[in-house]
Length: 152
Image 1 (cartoon, rainbow, N blue to C red):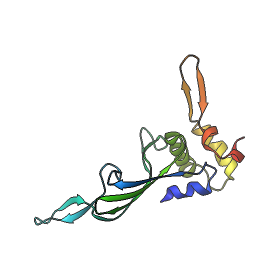
Image 2 (image 1 turned 90 degrees about the vertical axis):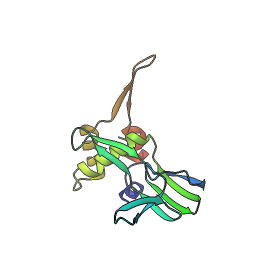
Image 3 (image 1 turned 60 degrees about the horizontal axis):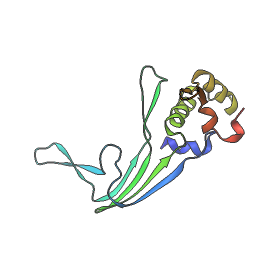
């Protein structure tokens, strides 16, 4: 549950999105399920009727070790027969937030101060996107996902 460290980081805090209702929130690709042994000695999946699922942040690297790609948000889920209570951890500008956070936590020198680490991260992992519309616009997502006191 490394994503909980975001609350004590220079990144804006996560918000919680609650769901209460019939089972509908996947964890991540399937509805809540569990494995049981079948008669043939192999394992099969069956829908969860009662219990918890804790889903970590989903991410991967693409072309190199620092080319992070966000896949899914962390979720805590409790199932009680056909009902579910789920809490999803939502980040602002989700894709950019998690990719920058992963770079900051995994690829910056932890012996440096927070500000020095952020300077290095912004330099090495810029996260500047260009939007082409009526006029060209550059957006630095670091400025949108960091707490105010860490901006410049």
